View 1 (cartoon, rainbow, N blue to C red):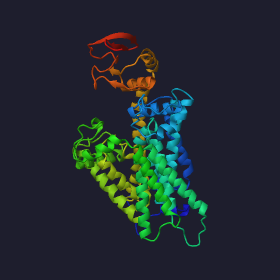
View 2: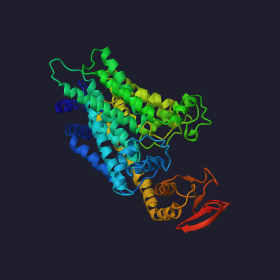
View 3: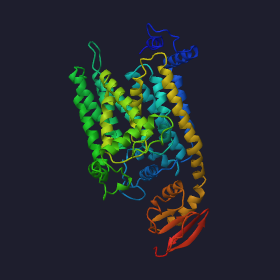
View 4: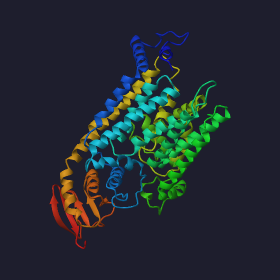
Length: 506
């Protein structure tokens, strides 16, 4: 949409006085936001610089993040891929493969990985802006800011998790698939080479997306549905749509080759609420389809409503889940409007992905629903876009609310906690040196979770919490508050921790 068209939307609606319920200051704010839409580059750069404040040598440790690092390090060392010494990876190899070169630079390349995650965040923002601009036109800049200010996006961006890479590949793959579907206008000259390049980009994107997270195949499903819908309207692209379908089939094939078999097996029984006997049942969500519907609606609300990331249990209806239910209804109505107006790949893929989440018997806070965030923001936009006097102000205010929450959680909670953990590296190194030469299982009692994960990273072997498997480890790292353990003898005192060894250990 041209700049003149964008600016025209700032005019009051015909027959409605501009001053009714609207102060001069508020009108100036809206006009300023409209002018920013006309010059998006400085503001996109500002978003990139704002995201860069998280670049640091700190490791925001998590179980999944530690596992990814272990796999990546094995790839960098040129040995068979392992996760903490086990050939059973339990994770797709795409993201570890992407970050593995960092371990050729340093044994703990957290600064470099932080830069890589930041770069992924910047590319994601650019992809979201391109998608918003093509799909909605007006509001693309501030809707992109709304997405990038989200606390979940910030949290994932500073962690060694696959989501930043997945989100980036997802949005650019969707953009490429949309380009494949663009019908050739009468008289337009589009070379065969251009069409093939678009197909190649879409195919590579789908395959790479599935290699990072298997669920990336939802983009292929959205493409098929969008292509069929456009064909029914006589708008299908004339450039080898069958080849793009083959690329989608390849992505599906790859996904089912690398997907975790125990989770495929668990998905069926999960519908009936019976997961007993399955390998990862402990991390699964109990209950039937209705229970998971409540969980996913809660997760969507936690993602979209600033400051409510911890509100609602997802297991019972309360005030928070009632609010989230209203948000879900608003999103569903907005999605329907987008479908009727412009059914692109993302719009068609969203119900496929959400349906998958209703079957998938696992929860991970808002990590599973964050791929839908750009579409959720666009769906909310359909409720305010006709209010030309305050629509951008509403979106910018919501983005500001999310940014305050994201900065507050990072600056007041996550960053101080990461600094406390970082001061434990010398102690962790000494513990690892004392254990490394001896075999056996390692457990930890009354130890900070990050220290346990740091020790697992240093040893490249699992370090389990003693509370989950009491008395099972050959080595025990005990904090000052740990209860006495029979059958162990003290081996060393390392900082605040006592290293004990089982009496019968080899």
